[in-house]
Image (cartoon, rainbow, N blue to C red; front, side, top):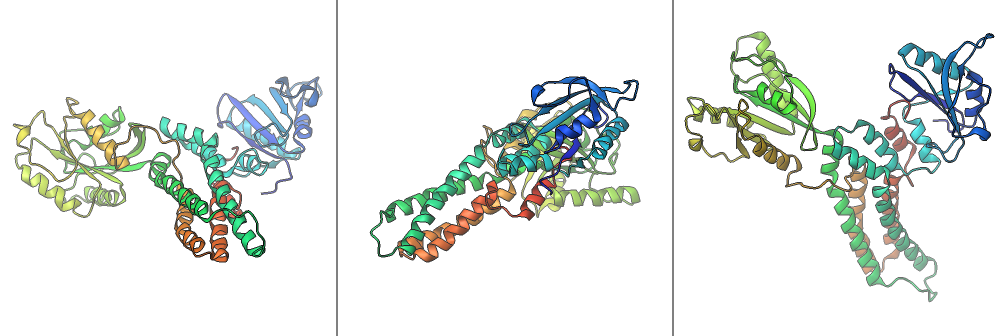
Length: 453
């Protein structure tokens, strides 16, 4: 990305009532004044004020009415001079206005380029920049709160604190190498080792939050599976809160997979309803059954629906075990308990299991409790303050694995080997916050952003 020119992009949703176009860079006010006209120009004398004017008025002063505001750097999102133009919405009008701005000397911004400039201009570290994208793509309140905390710098400050401790020890090691004969005030060996043990412990705590991070950022793929006519689609509709799937008494109504995004107890979930598993000569139903098997393989949690009112309960269980013998994350859901003769006689299952009635909405809270525990893989009550991404986790694991050797080298007073590994840890932690990150890391992160952010 060129960091010196002036960029522009549509920052509002295309097609809405209002179009917002942001211009950022050294020529922002000059370009803004070329395409937006008023009795008062955009300048330092009226900074941070919304001014009413027109877009490219003709000789008679006729042009689209629009607001414009000029904010000089560095006190802006990007750290550069910024002009925002608020005009009428609509797909064509937004694109027309952006074209005029580009013709006036700006360049179309690349995905995430505004946030990238905020990062390189010191307005945020790399974890805060990533949190901007997390906030935009959040699918639950918990995910939003996590992104907000990360944007506030909670993770970045923690990583920076740990990195500073590593750098302090590294400086001490290098001093011992450079001035072996000098009687300098070196850090006591016991203090160095204790600090390293503390850093190792804190790194491990952060690394363990990767599961929460993955769930909150990416959601969980949850497949609803079972025989035909056990209530899979009705259960899907109940969890979604609206009728997404067609339900009938006819077995095999669902012939394809249906996917919907929702959140359950604050957990983002991709719910997938599937065709009932059975032997079938119907070509279309057969394709649906194959897709069911594929969905099961790709899922993170399987909700296997059992018919509590079936005549042959043992056969219900046998079919479940046959299809799921290679899978661990399974919740057995006995449905239709309102029609069962005696639910107390339902056999015990060596799986998380719950008895419900979709029709009468019984047992749903018990199901949600079991689902939440399975999703987090342990009881989960509070929102995590920090939940690292997979990118963060990779560098944390690298750091964690290096620290035992550093401790061993320091105990042996092998300062040279200790210094090499300490540098590697400092770089790994620096990659998380952007201190030592390479260009390919930047490109990978910011390319995932939408244009205009």
